[in-house]
Length: 237
Image 1 (cartoon, rainbow, N blue to C red):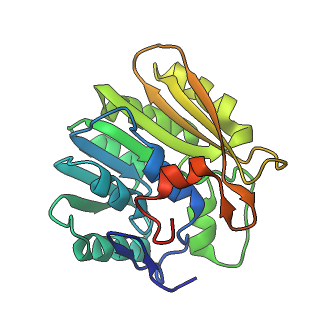
Image 2: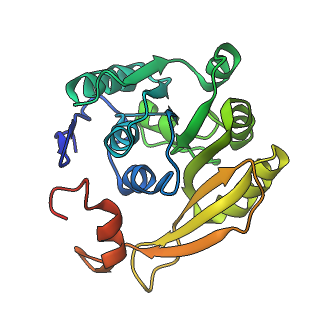
């Protein structure tokens, strides 16, 4: 899992990051802002930088900022940004979310986050990995409050969270005047339970577009919908 992960237009090193590249990050990077053209982007909890790199490939946004609190992940993210074709547009801050929200004056047209979501204590024996998965480090309430401050008026905010957390998360966002515009519930295969939800919010109330994405027809045989979403990135799609 420490090997570099090669995509069609960039390579991501991940040996210094607790959280390795997984389907969640790729889904968020491919799905966010599909009907939106942002000029400025913020990636909260960047890890390897994978989501920011995908968004840099998809959009010509002049500003793509990332935020990462873990020192090793931050350094790896910076290296991945500098090695990419879009190094001049990508910047990673080494700071916590509350500190960043307090100090930043600008707003963003697209804010994305693959946040830590384990509310119960996790103990894998790897403290950096546990920190990256534990929502004590970025509670959902703090996340949506900060986003409400930093999102531009026409902006979008996208997250990927556990399916079972989606309803509560939407309620938290509504309390900060952020409303679900698009929702995509994800399951691994047809007979599996829903595992994740992609949700995109805006400041404007509108009818919520709800869809379902199934990743595989059978082991290593991907659905047409999943291929369509990720084919610009994965080498073998």
